[in-house]
Length: 396
Image 1: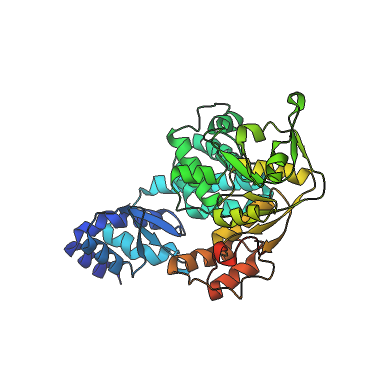
Image 2 (image 1 turned 30 degrees about the vertical axis):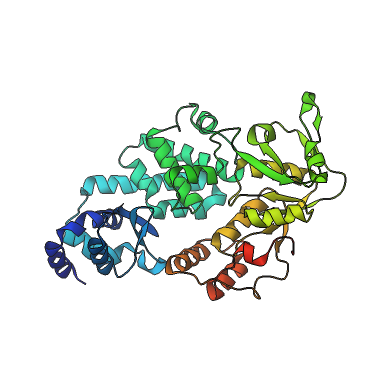
């Protein structure tokens, strides 16, 4: 559809224009559109949504009360969306646009020099447009963007920190990331770094290892071990609970004060993404840690203590993208020797992928050629995914 035809259609349907403006802003200011664009709030009109969805070739979804456009990789090129730019008449001021583009490129160049091992991640941030949108024409924000990138890496590599501490570490200001523009930009960058565009603010921060409350963030563990807290002494109640067939709950505040843990014998844990299979492991007397989906900072901190004591893990979870990404995250804290069930999931009932799930996996594979579970993801693309509960718990 050319811009003249599109302009004629929009003249008859002006109520669609506000929902298209975010597409246009991305297309006018970046080489690639993001894979997911929030078009606006759900207006509660099935007619409006159907007309918008037809105009966008069926690529819209309603998610959490918002109209969402999802784009597979071949459809993200900004040039494909120029008819919308021309039809709606969005034109950034050339001087500002050129300056903003130059500052964003400069920030990305500086990040590559400072972090030569993170080129793929910097490329993703640059392509997403989040650097350009944040820096704009304000050169002072370049330094802020570099500090925010450091904050993202801190959360990726050593999660388990409050926003106050993160702000103090990266900006020398405990209030810097509690709200305002820096907090908003941190979240936008975390969406790219952790590839989680769909989570709410609270969900995203918890997923990335930000600790909201040091006592409500916790790890649930079923294993025979003793932990040592310096002058406070040794605590063996997890061992006693294990003998009684009960799991222990350790808050982040406790885990961060642990100096070391001790084991009586070599230990191989099961890390369980979901609750019901975790209960199966407990009932079977198999040492296990419940990750509650993506492991929070408390879980990852405890797993690092187990790893330091010589323990290893096998991971049990869903065979979708999130399930394998959870396994990869766990592997950053403790050696993961394999996935459960050990015989694989080919013999189990599979659930079909919807269009959005398929596009998300394809995009992730394209952007992460070194991902450790690529073979498993390709199986999921070809055959669908298996819920952890289908595979069972203690059966292994």
